[in-house]
Amino acid sequence: MIKVLTSGTWDILHEGHIEFLKDAKKQGDFLIVMVMSDHAVYRKKGKLPLFKQKTRAIKLRQLGIADQIIASPENCDNNLELIVNIKPEVIALGYDQKDKKVEEIKKYLFSRGQFPTYYRSKEFANGIHSSHLRNKVTLEKSI
Image 1: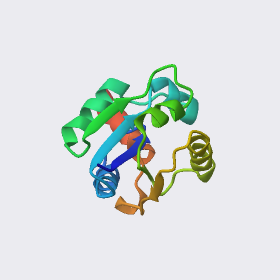
Image 2: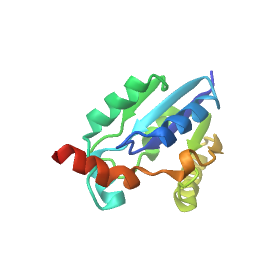
Image 3: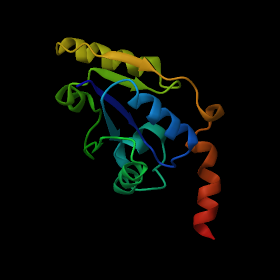
């Protein structure tokens, strides 16, 4: 069984996320989706997500694409040890994920004797990002 792992904020699920997840699932037999903690999102993006981690995980589960949803621990500065424990054969990356972060993951896993394949997706939904939709959702929540 080929395990595929991907990770993200998944705050406002949109067409680009859905297409990415479907594409990631095609890279193996079992798709594991990691949901970043609220604290990690804040450290990475400088703002809290609109939806709590538990809500984001539930929404992902409702899509029915992933075989397993994992919430990263709140106190986790990075998910590298979690990735080591999962032992994915494929790590699916978004087209816009930073090369520096990918190199950090590769180096860490290599040091632990793990050599997954790294799959970078194409751009979906014309590059829509949750941040493009954030103001609209914030406005809708306040009405």
